[in-house]
Image 1 (cartoon, helix red, strand yellow):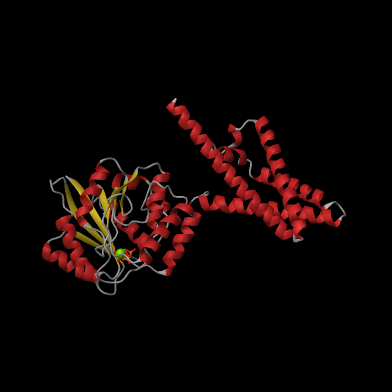
Image 2 (tube, rainbow, N blue to C red):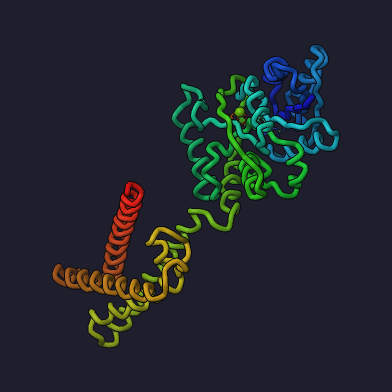
Length: 385
Ligand SMILES: Nc1nc2c(ncn2[C@@H]2O[C@H](COP(=O)(O)OP(=O)(O)OP(=O)(O)O)[C@@H](O)[C@H]2O)c(=O)[nH]1
Ligand SMILES: [Mg+2]
């Protein structure tokens, strides 16, 4: 028979732990005796004596539990100790991770187990796939917090969008896979962000990560253990998680854009101060700025074409043609903004540079949008032909 071990981390959960054990050993068991169930409670010397309460309750009802106690160093560390205990003592083939505060429904353990048996290495119980639920009366602030955390893992962290609820704490893991990935060294995050670190690490190692819908409930008793340090660690961890992420890419674009703008203003001002015609000075500045853009963003034309991230797909003669077209377009923007500004008597270099940058950005964004639509339409008509 397969063995399932439920790991639950606890810190001051004395009010919840009895009900949790009851529901795990009543609702979490297999309907067809395909698996047996045991539990490991990872308690960090809870001052409210969670461990004692749990042991007494388990003795009374004959539940198969182990309590491991340690110093409080965060949720991630607690789970790592739990994993190690299960592996060292060969307790199970599948680990279930569940919060002790009754936020997760033990009836759904079966679904998580089934998904591991279908070939997943890590199964995340998800509030955000269809059929997944958050409490109907969740305050706006909780919804926003949860959504922001998810956005941060994707936008700042660059985590795959395939996983809808990467911070969720109700999970199943194939123990054989867990042994193979050296989680102690490799899975980052000591606090709550450890859940995100685990998803990222499994994906990086090419392991199968999937989700099953769960119904999430608010805790009835006790307090949340999330502290400001956990939130800061979450951000810092996501920022460091991958060398590239949408946020890092956009930040880099912004920095290069600002650099180009500074060079543009510098060359135009120097030319002006040396008696060169202001229109010519600005066109010269533009050439220098364009040089910087092309040198620092070599894949810019492929990005425009929408079909690759490398310029290899755009042949050399086209790159020259595109560069000349772009240059001509920018020269016309610079000259028309110059003429317009001199008509209305506005002479600020900064104002001029920013107006040119904004006009250029809007035009390029519009052109990219139109180009994408054009490519889409062509594809559609090729498909229907
Ligand atoms: N051992 C241990 N358990 C912890 C630690 N921090 C949190 N936990 C447990 O981890 C589980 C999740 O913590 P919660 O405080 O409920 O976090 P949350 O569910 O994101 O927050 P709420 O929705 O407000 O409850 C609970 O069972 C906590 O007791 C810790 O540092 N050590
Ligand atoms: Mg909770």
